[in-house]
Image (cartoon, rainbow, N blue to C red; front, side):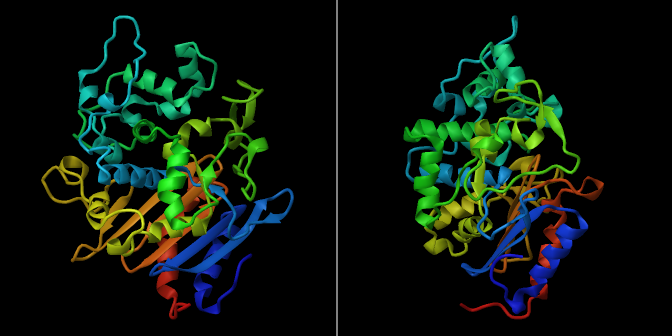
Length: 394
């Protein structure tokens, strides 16, 4: 273990040490905040197994889909500033020339997709129904559009805008990486700045976060302090980028194109960075990022089937704007969270209703019985937090 030990927080030490040992996880980092203060930050196992380099508390990991709440905050800031509206139509914001098969036409429902639909994953694209997530098919899309691989976001947008939607926008929830790719492009269109620049200035800057950055696909382009990513069986896939396109490469280092996933899954962060971000909403009246009414919108229940059962009863949990939400008891209390998952990466960020926040990051997503570490550890972290009898006060 690396980082400062505190006997009062031993339940976290014991859990992470046992968890990575029993599941043969190479490395992990855990950070915990209470009432806005970082009270725990430690590393476990190896950032690089071959070099026997330990995970430091501030090590950078690919956080995958935890990128989504970061993107959502930037969008909601633009709404606060009057530069964007939640009911703005996506096709009015982005100029995209759809790629169409001969004899096909643009789905008229595309004109109904709004910014709010993208934020809440109710935009009409369902990767399970269409059997494809376009963000992971860079070479195929580049081939169809006759451009050099890998496909960039604009190529993916042209391809998807030429395909029919899977359901009416707003009708139901279906998780969509592509929807958050569009939000990244909307941020760029409205601000006139690159997506990463915008996030650094508007979201990370006010929090004093300087270490976060967008990740790169290839191992040779790893960032300083970034961990190495592993699969349990050494899984490979055909390279979509680099000099070995089409040839087998380790899945985390070329099996998909991370640079195109910026707004939905491309960020690198440390565990302390993420709990600092999560803590920004602990006291809505004094949030450095959003106004109280905007924070309420971010966590609000979506209308219709996205937030309610077919008989009208509220769902036990739902997706707000960039966060999963589970109401707890009465009075508006709720737990908020997001997971992240890519070959070589499994992550979890939790905002608990009692003022505790935590982030746990792993440099693999492999586990026994196809168990994803970031999800398997979720209930165990709640148990460990409940076992703490005295929390540090300074």
